[in-house]
Length: 309
Ligand code: NAP
Ligand code: 8YV
Image (tube, rainbow, N blue to C red; front, side, top):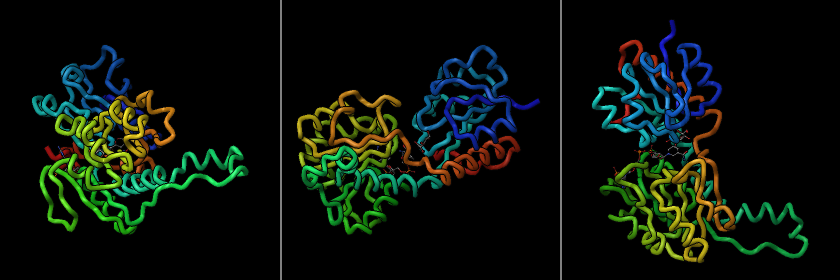
């Protein structure tokens, strides 16, 4: 008989196929609701960056031993509850870093150079009535990165190719050539483009609030490829609508899959559906890593990529 696994994420076919070959897969929504009554022998779970694995869900699964997150961010998992039960948690670091950094650059260029408006302008025929309005130069601008981790550092490397000056904030300065600011407000005041590359959780909740947006100012741009919870989305929508911020490009939101309604009609906003790591190559690599972690857990071997805590 196949072991039973709970899946609380929409996963690519390549991973679904691999899971189905080894497990009897039980499905529920991204919070684990709808899992039904027969939970007693579920021993493994697969979640993703949009899932919430609450203490209540963990406690409802008495045989659960491992949670494999299809993604690097595991802020959705109640780690204290997992620890209390001795449940192992794994994630997929490194394999997605390049794609997410590439996408951050795409968002930065896209919003600064007004690609969304330009596409509509070209298609609608408005071009025949005159040229499009000027946009904002990215090369040699000042970039600020919140969270100089794997992804933040990869963004910095790409930005060096654009001759941008680079500054960052984090919990502590690192041994790097970039300028460190102790707070997000100080960083925001010193840059043109502020990129969020930090994960979610209590310590980063609304790290980008009204004060940070004010410091970034009417010529500043915010890009978020980290987590929606890091940015106060209502404060952001207000600042954008009132011209107190030049623009924003967001891949992640406080309440996915529902961006704040106030953002939807604004032209100075570029919105994408949490897709920064969604290329064929990377999704294959993430799928392989999820399976490698599950196989290792199953055979009692060392887990390839346990979460660091
Ligand atoms: P990482 O290597 O752990 O980097 C996170 C960085 O954030 C670390 O350098 C850390 O630096 C900093 N940090 C942590 N807590 C902080 C705090 N309270 N205040 C300020 N800085 C803090 O992780 P990663 O692989 O780069 O991934 C980062 C995040 O990107 C993930 O957690 C996930 O949320 C997000 N992500 C999004 C997508 C997407 O599809 N949009 C895809 C992949 C990942 P210090 O320790 O020096 O503070
Ligand atoms: C994925 C992510 O899109 O790695 C993360 O933390 O948020 C993304 O890579 C996500 O896990 C799939 O939903």
